Length: 484
Image (cartoon, rainbow, N blue to C red):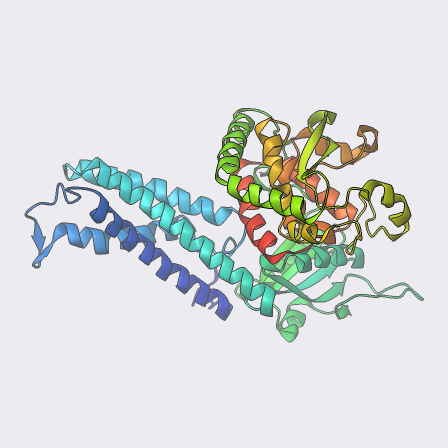
């Protein structure tokens, strides 16, 4: 059992221990798979180990089946790839796996040089690449299983006590309950002050006031305290709480005042024991943007070629099911306010625009868009296309022409003048076929939530972030969540 800084045993959640154990097993299997792949694909993979045996076993077999898995596990541990704070969410875990892989490459090179082994370069390269690919695939699978457990039965999650003013606590509660895959499950709220006389406290969780936090957490069976907002605790109270939690196995999470700013834009700068948060401005230009543009167009071209039979089948289904054009083109506002025509498969009857005015009073959206779950203007085939987002596939043409990106804020059928204030920041990047809005709830989100997510993407976009959103898009589309 882990120990605290003072040597006391620190309890850990049983699900987390089991999850780490499964990760260790998967990482060992990934290392063995990398070794077997090299033996199968590389001729003379055992170059540098010929005629050398240890206890009757060839030294190459020992290195491939024992040395590589053991060394890989040690490097993953050293890189913090099993740190409970990064497991199952975000990109930090994956970055640590990549870091361990780089160290593995350097270690093998130094050992070969030190022992004067003339190793096959193809063998070394294949082992390093195989370790990275198999380990990342295994971790993606483990994450998918973990998220499934959290969504279905709320298992394998941290039970959280929210500490702070009611609005701040409810804001965090809304975010984490909307994202069960993050593994945080609020169980109660603790207010810093008693409500004023006559003030009603309405919350979806039990509310406590005036308790000592550590005994309350133990009573609730929770394992995490989340301090919400600036009024959650005074600075000295927060420091005292951190001391009290040492050796208890309880986690302390502090929600900063600077919200929706994460990742590499935040740097901690301590001065005389006072941690200052440096918040860098977002980077929306440079080499990464150029690479993103090139990858978008190459992927769009390949996608159009590979999906051409599917596109043809959808076009024929639309043509035979309802008279009218197959494609629907509409003006949208794109990068830096430039208008363009977006391509989509037609999913509505041809008189949809004329019937819109009569349906405005049934609008279920609170923003710039018209949304209606049972829109009578949608054709039967259109409902199926929308459910699986197949109507969006022709937008690969817009991506190929540089008007859109694979990932970005969705282009809206509005005028440029409608983008005022903070909402206009959506136009700093190219609109996308999918985006953070789509993988976080799609049409089920409010307009404010959708705008917040789009602005978060604009401020934090990266190639790794795009890949993560594309990965999530597949599961969201197949589950048909929020599509209408």
